[in-house]
Image (cartoon, rainbow, N blue to C red):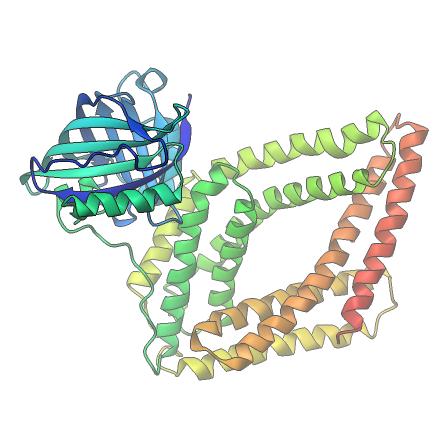
Amino acid sequence: MSARESIEVELKLDVDADQPAPDLAGIAPGATTAAPAVYELNATYLDTPGHDLAAHRITLRRRTGGTDAGWHLKRPSHHPDARRELAIDFADAPADGGVPQAIREAITVIVRDRPLIPVAEITTERTVTLVHAADGAVLAEFCQDRVIAHAHQSQLTQEWAEWEFELVEGDAELLTVARKRLRAAGARKASSASKLARAIGAEPRAHKPARLPKKPTALDLMVHSLATHRDALLTWDPLVRENAFDAVHQMRVTARKLRSILTSFPEILDPAAIAGLADELRELGEVLGQARDREVQLEINRGLLALEDRVPDDLRKALIDDEIARQERSLRTLRFALSSARYLKLLDDLDDAIANPRPGPDADRGAVDVALAGMEHAGQRLRKAQKRLDLLDPWSDEWVEQVHRIRKRAKAVRYTADAAKPLRLKAAKKTAKRAAVIQSHLGDFQDTVVNREQIARVAALPGLSPAAVFVLGRLDAREQTRGRAAVQAYLDRV
């Protein structure tokens, strides 16, 4: 199925009906305008019965007419005037008129197992004027819209007029000039973020963590932290499905932070009410971890071979081509897991823990007291592991395993301290920073441990060329030196 992803950067402004549009010729040096073209656009907007997509500022429509008929999914972008648009032509969509699979996957984390139903019908009479640069390139598209919208739930029909100015090859400066010129011609700030939002009334709002009160309870902090990371999980999920840069890593970290909050402060919420939630988050972290480990290993392998003047073909296949195949398999497994009923239930359980928290024994305690106690407990476990290391023979298997345990406990300290950061505690910031340093140095060492194990496995492959074995020996020596340097850097800090 062919899908087009783009960033839509546009101005949306309200105007009175029949408001004369300004002449946009000369809006940029040498800019001219083409003759207007008129289209009739008919769109059906879909959402869940509870308007879950609208609550996350997402719109899904099936539209006929105009130059881009088909399915369109619009999602927020980091820029206030921009939205991400996923478009699929009817020719590439299901013949039965159902929602295309690529779009379903992009909104699974929001929609889950809830049905998608028509929530509004919107007809737009659109007059389009293209703005051309001196060389003929299209800088922008100016749309004058007459809109008739009917909302299914309220049975309300509305009519209004609006202007849209969308960049094509123009830049941010052109958008600024256009805003001034259109406002001067009588346009006003848009009353809603989208046609759908205006059609269905007040746009629903997704849950956003409320600001903590001056003296928050432990329950206040718990709900705030869970909501913050739940929202991050919802953000990273569709990016993971697209294999966007760093998305797997960030979603894995988010899952681990959610689990750390629950395990570091086990008595804030009723243990019976959240039974199994931490375990499910651990399972999610593991399946994300498998994909992330393959991603990291491929990056490391490329870095190792980049230092070599000559790389035998069989070694490149073993370290690069075979690793790419393993990464692709892990990504397929991950996408399957993110569409499973188990994962969707985890999301529902998280939502319930946030919206309907069942208080535990520590719920009414002061958030500061509980946070400090949690950091102290995590710190004690870290220090205990560090003392244990002194009793072991350096570089023995048991010693290496203990170093790995120290790294994991430093990570737990960091996540526990991060959970306390909304309280603006200096101790939390310092603790997290110290733990991050330990985690970084020992993480580098752990990478070399894994890399050397991989090098040994590849070296044992039957039929490997002598040249490949020689290069592997050199790579192993280099990783050994790097690993020892990472451990020394850690020891110098403790």
